[in-house]
Length: 155
Image (cartoon, rainbow, N blue to C red; front, side):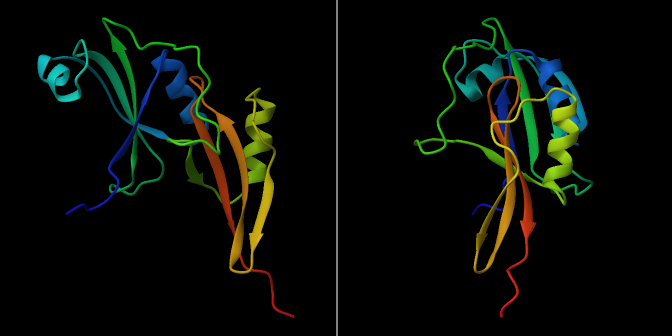
């Protein structure tokens, strides 16, 4: 039935600004395309098929999940002025990217002026844990920077 997660679409009010943010996180642009097509209008139930999108990928795996950053035109992508869903509320709250060093990512991006929601924090379970830091992209989408941690040694 289903094979894998193909892409995550993120609507942006400023495509170039959003792409620059994700490239700072290490994503690479695969394609940058403008589309003006009535089939898009029908397929996605939107007022206009006029858009520009950039596909971004982490790493070299051709099967990796893609970020599809989209800016719509006529009407333009709307800035609703509302805050994204809180982490404990129903709905998509965040997506996570893996790193070998959450602290280094945090330090580098914070030095560039990127504002994080949380500082790197360790969450441990008996099976292992994570070091995570949350950051918002320019349109308020929450990205969880995650480092996997081994289980504590028995004893």
